[in-house]
Length: 416
Ligand code: AMP
Ligand code: MG
Image (cartoon, rainbow, N blue to C red; front, side):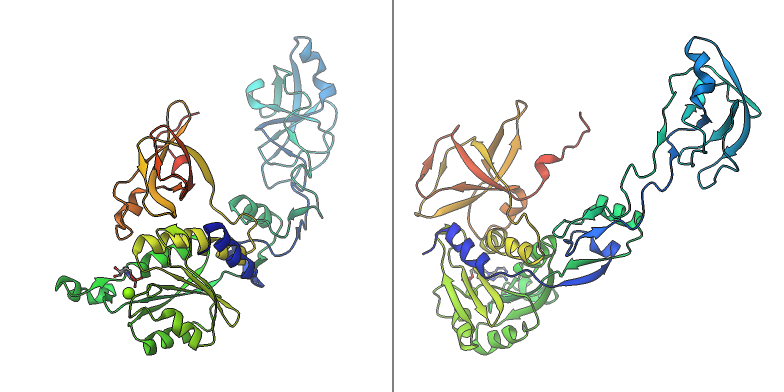
């Protein structure tokens, strides 16, 4: 049996970055740039005012520094989107709005509050703004500057920067198409819920969690439905995954009489790379390559399927999309209760991690840890990692926890 780290390394060694495609800017959010992108213009394109006020020549208002008041002739008004009709001359001011181009000859914008607000002439009462309130052309970036390097994640700010430079399409790595196949004669989809009510079947909840996890990880789920526990049915489903970038099956990889997935995979020409990982939940993990398509077969237990996805599938999908950061962050936490594990396996226990008033991170378990209890995943924001070498962990001890979401960073009240 491989350790979790060994299994992860074996999988990641087979995963290749996908090819790039051209994507409309707004659709590129969350993807990764496949090439360097340079600025086509200079931003801002002209020096502009950062205040509503009066564009002036500092030489004209030096007396204000000595406590005097100076009156200038107002010769024009420049709104954002307009340009000054002519350069500013000695003794003159122009009314100017935020974002409007500063006229040639002006070197300061005196904010309106430091004047009498006059329209024909203006009295300058305060010289605090001498040399100020002008945003020079190119202060954000210059034409030719690299705005994004190959490998840069496309986040909202970068989208805005690219838009400002007129870039309407970007080359980004493709999102992986993930074939999702559930298997088991006990399973139905929601539209056959009558069978569940009759206590004959359960809903394939993995079809929903794995679909959602795939989307959150940037992939495109391709739901191939539920295979029956027969070789023929599994074969048909696996064949339907031919144009996908990754195959994700759940269930049928244990040692039960009807656990056919691994056999069918090999009968189709797949090469199984390993089976089983020293972890709980999710020990019966299978990994292989079907021609050049990676296959991960996770245990059907709803929690096992999710934990295996987090540990092994998500990093693979991120690598395919060109991300540099592939793995979830682990943090050191202090456990608030005694933690015991049984089997000699690395345990990933569902936990709630929170930050106490003094800033330390503490963890408590969500309760019972059965791998069939999907509600425990609803409560958890982290997986507490208990090494096989620590069968009993006393309260107050430190362990690592894998953070599953950003809820630690979010609070209900704004505070600084
Ligand atoms: P298996 O991996 O086939 O041994 O299944 C392990 C457990 O997971 C069994 O209790 C199954 O009923 C359950 N299970 C398998 N597939 C799913 C699924 N798609 N959704 C919810 N539960 C499942
Ligand atoms: Mg089964």
